Amino acid sequence: MLGLKFRVDCPYFTTFREPTSTSLILTYLIPPYTTIRGMISNALGLSRDDLRVQEWFKIGIKPLNFEKCREMAKILKLKGTGKNYQRTFPSSPMFREFLVEPSYEIFLVGDDERIKEVHSALLNPERPLYLGGSDDLVDIEVFEPVEVEETEADEVWSVAEGVYEGCIVEKVPYKFVRVGRTFSVEYKTVSIPVNTPIKGTFRSISFGEGENIWVT
Image 1 (tube, rainbow, N blue to C red):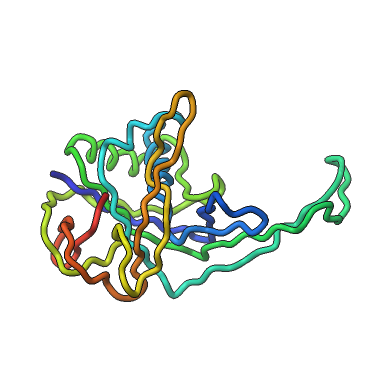
Image 2: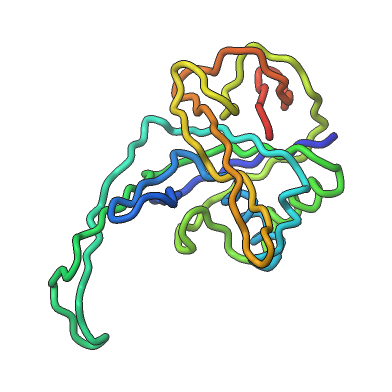
């Protein structure tokens, strides 16, 4: 079984919009699993509705740079014809929450050939890579695939499914499910470690000494 690790740095800011937010657009603290799969699909040059990547591997997420912050920005709304604009607000102003310079380590575990294919695609992507909005380009550091094994651990530094003490808990999109001609979203409730590991009993994946990662 092969594992692949890559680091994603957003050099400015980004937003992973919570779909239930309206005039106050809030962001998830981590990129949803659907967003990560979308970035990988983009690297492979797949079409928007091609969901095969969902079945290729499990994903682990390790957030970095918690010393950075979140900011709330007011979105300027202008009324006009396209040539001229007036600074009036026919409806209530909108506010968007941004993550400032977020960084993450992403871990993939799956079939050897699929991992090698994704490794190659991330090194030479078919299209520009981004997380969040299409103008939120990212810097990526890709490591060589390694042999990994499942192990039992009493702590993990990565995101873990469930609710754990001392963590930020979020319900994030996990995968798309086809329902007739449309799609619904499956969610997972996860705990995000801040400055200390998550304590518990985990069936995790070992990516090397001291790097036990929970994947799903």
